[in-house]
Image (cartoon, rainbow, N blue to C red; front, side, top):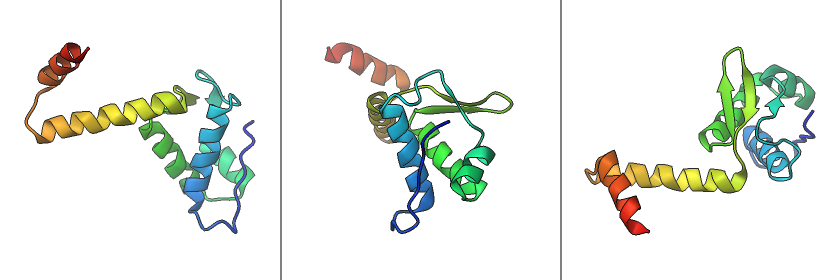
Length: 115
């Protein structure tokens, strides 16, 4: 079980605190890639928050590339914070390229020629 704590006196939103605590647990090796996390309902009960609060935090971590959420398979750690930073920058680059009219093939060619 993850050691995740929230501080109700902290001005940060609860979902941000939950996400930060899970991110910390991954960064410190408490939860490693391949590990399964407890269900959102269970985490919510332990933390004393609404399940939607936990789900919002988990979705944010999924979008960062840290977690994978699959129906009937649960929640798994798939990345680390440094990898997450890289994935976020790649996603930003892809969006910028699309806005400028470049295709995926154009972008791949640019990356291949950049090295």
